[in-house]
Amino acid sequence: MTPDTSVADATANAAGWSLARAMMLEAERLFPKVHDPAQRLLLEQRVLDLVMAGLRTTLITAAVGPALVVWLIMPSVGPMAAMVPALLLYALTVERLFFIRRAARAQADGDSRPRPWLHAVTWRTGLSSAIVAGWGYPVVISGNASLVFVILALATIVAASSVTQFCCWPPAMWASFTPMLLGLSAQVLLLGGDERLFAALFTALLWFTLGMAGLRFARTLHNDMSTRLLNEQLMRELDERRAQAEAANAAKSRFFAAASHDLRQPLQAMSLYHGVLEGSARDAPTLARMGECMASLDRLLEVVMDLSRLDAGQITPAPSAFAVQPLLERLAGMYEGMARQKGLRLRIHPTTAWARSDVALLERALSNLLANAIRYTARGGVVLGVRPRGNAWRLCIVDTGIGIAPEAHDAVFEEFVQLDNAARDPTQGTGLGLATVRRVADLLGHRITLNSRVGRGCVFALDLPRADPPPDGMPYPQQAAPSARPFCGRVLVVEDNPSVRDALVLLMRMWGLHADAAHDAGQASRSMAQHAYDAVISDWRLPGERDGLAVLREARQRLPDLRLALLVTGEDIQHLHQAGSAFQVLRKPVRPLRLRALLAARLGVAPQEVVHAR
Image (cartoon, rainbow, N blue to C red; front, side, top):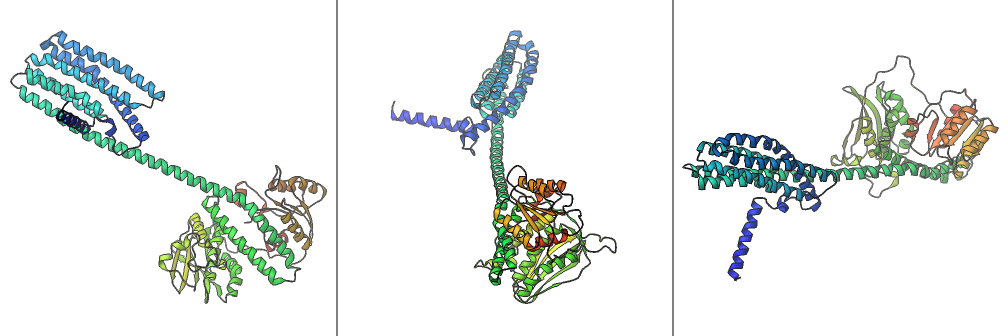
């Protein structure tokens, strides 16, 4: 072989491959956007599904078409020339039925190789097309021009139908009409009559037009399939990422729920021991500083747990109608000392407004807003007030503090954002307060707004739905003040943590109560069998099979004169509410003053229905 011959062969091969690519005869180039073999295999499987659906559709034409052609051409070409191609087509139709069934069984058995089946469809459609082309020979040599044009019209219909059925797999599409149209064109040109040149050119032009149209359909379809596959992949990845994020969030919530109890136990013991020492120790400043540290740690833990419960969707609001004035007075009483220490005035605008919301959650949000207002105000004061706004009440907290720049209005509601605390001074808060406010407001469906000017102060506002007040004469609910006198009675403390248990017992005895201790439900049962108790205070999580709820239920049954059944827990109270608990509940760390107030309200008075406490 000479060098010139080799170059010529290489040029011919290159031209042949270029033509094959242009006609989309190469399976590897049908999906140019997809390069992953697994994704290409999935696309080819979908193409096989479409091709098999097209093959089943052509069975209807294959059952009727040959009989119609035989009836049409038999008078001109004779029975043998008319019926032999028809019988061959019917034989191929029967074979196609079995082929479709084999392909369906293979797919059901997990055959993941679509390309051999696609090639099998290609040669079957090509063979059928070649038989139809052979049918034209006796028609053309008959010299019946009208019959020739009728056959060409039928071939046009069949070819157009083949393009729509098999354009998803171009090799099968070309095989379905190329032998038929080009074969008829060649026969008419070589054997036809006077109109043979026009008919041959028309048929060849029809082949080219249908082929180009089919390629455009194929490219559009393949691009759509590729895009859809990529979108499905992106959606799956997005779903996986969302599932991972949800799993991580759930794991975080489970961790906080599990860790909350253990985190609060030492803080609970410290708080109770601090309460014991307050009445007897001489170093009052040291105790005061220790109390401030514990209160700071308590606030940090509380806000972190609040954010965790809000993010996990574990808090369900329970809105009800309430008077706004007692809420404002309660908030002012809580923060009046803080404001007085900074030389600020804390004022309330009196109001008779009634609104609808979850008071406990709303109070938590307003507490954070009020604490922030006092914290970032050096002179002047803070005002709490309500004003009408359409069908709602706008509850405002106005301060004369440092203000917030407009570009930072959104950022201040993010976690750990503190605009004027570059040194991370813990006395300036943790940066979680406003994040909690935003989540609580979203949960309650209350719109929150911020108006501020740097150096002039801020106005935070919450829009609350209006509510109808109760009938005239119904008083506002009042909270009982804690008693300063020693108590009388017997208390059972059920707690598995020794430090917390000992501190509670010491505190009860310092308040004049006779206190017994138990570390689990079994020991508590034995104590209740020996003594009559006025109050039972139990931790929720106890060793063994029975928890604090079981202890309190037993106490209710065995102690008819029981005045207080108190459950103390460091975990989410919402679970107890959903479980239908009817016992008093306090969150750890329990402050001695709050515990004393509860004992003062329950001991020494007639038994009454016990309600939930947050």
